[in-house]
Image (cartoon, rainbow, N blue to C red; front, top):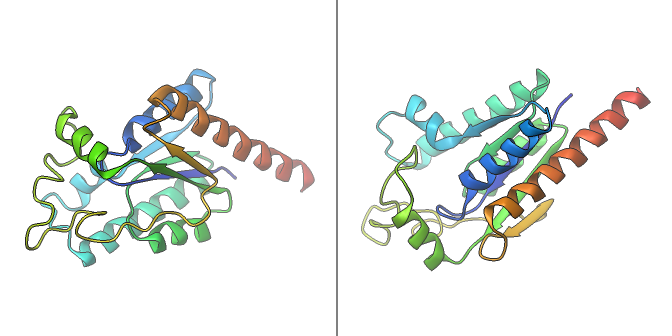
Length: 187
């Protein structure tokens, strides 16, 4: 058995940067890890995303399924996804025996500025530009963002830099792996 860590937080809170930093640290230690970045996966599942409730439900269920399948195959996983509805993260937790949630906290004005200035990647450009307008569905602005109720780790990304946050996630991964090793020896 392996483990999964889901990094959640509003758009611009630092999920991708923290996930990449943690994965880099783990790989440098010789540990295998896969990062499931929702924005990259969404490009394949919904090439022209509409961000409807139905589409989001499909995408997040698929993401949880991918994570559970990889963990079952022995591949540690870091999930980088907002998943603004707690139910999607809870479903992954229920399906994955060694699961942890990392809640990133960051004020909305900082998230907006980060999103505005971040380099082009998989994330859609201008997430917050249309927030508050008719038909907009930006988590934390137009639709509720439901933070974790009992995250195994909470990181304020205005206090911890990316390297520090990544190290905290890598340490959490080590604890999950150690609990996995203990369980294997007990069997």
